[in-house]
Image 1 (cartoon, rainbow, N blue to C red):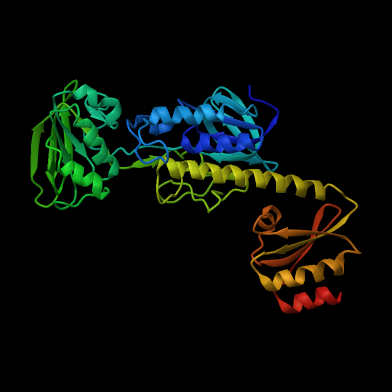
Image 2 (image 1 turned 135 degrees about the horizontal axis):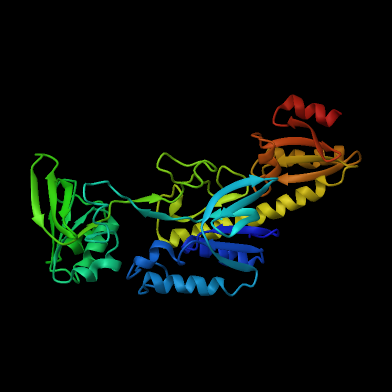
Length: 403
């Protein structure tokens, strides 16, 4: 199974970020493979109404992601594959994806859009009753609790907004909040709407100690974190909205992640591995929304396109085994370096091929050589690295000009 051909780009994950990457890759006519293990859209499909995606104020998550997918399918350079990526590695400068039952696939670059899953707190009864009264998605499960009194754990935007949705079906929704009375972690508008909802009330300074039942949830035991008092309340349903964990287990020994498992990226969505980018909720992002995920995807796709272009050009230059090459690395924001570039180019032009490397755009070789200086000179002969000189050191600059 698998394929011998090499893709320009492999995108792992078909959520908003991954599909946005696919759209930009398609526009650039990159030969792209999108791998999705389940249904396209990720967790956004669980949202009934998306009120903050520009230009689409009243779409459901499913409707919006359908638009993303339809847009991406316009491009013939994109191939779609349903399978799970088990492992990712780098071999001979290319990215290799090992999948479940579909073999391996190779790309010049890759974008990881692997998303998150609801955080599990390991509260007694939580796992036992998942799907039997314990739920993590209001849109998916609220209708199962029509005219019932249910409980919600959490105080962030997701918890409060989901509680509002659940209240459309439940007779009453009690939100359990770890903080002092009146202190929620959500935006002010959502908080005010919840306070003004007659079907929603709060239990403050509290958490869930245990969930009880037989074949289904029958009650929840709530602990006051200040007094330690335990109180049991009858209920058929408990919803958890206490954050998410990134689905990065299969890449956390390949790319650098933070202590929570979110992938570290720079402003171009680049990971610690050359040619590999990460986007959306699985990254160490300040904000995790559809609009930011879409932006991440656009940035990563453009960055990967330029990476491939620069790498292919570099490989073409180094294929000539009979040529001497001087690579001049400079920053367009360093006025002194720019003033010296032309002089340096003229000095070496008769002896060898001179290639200018604007490090704001062409960083493949710059990163490969582990350079830190914004002004440097690297020599290659017969396709092999020979020497490097830091031109930000005045003595080195003078020696090069006088050589």
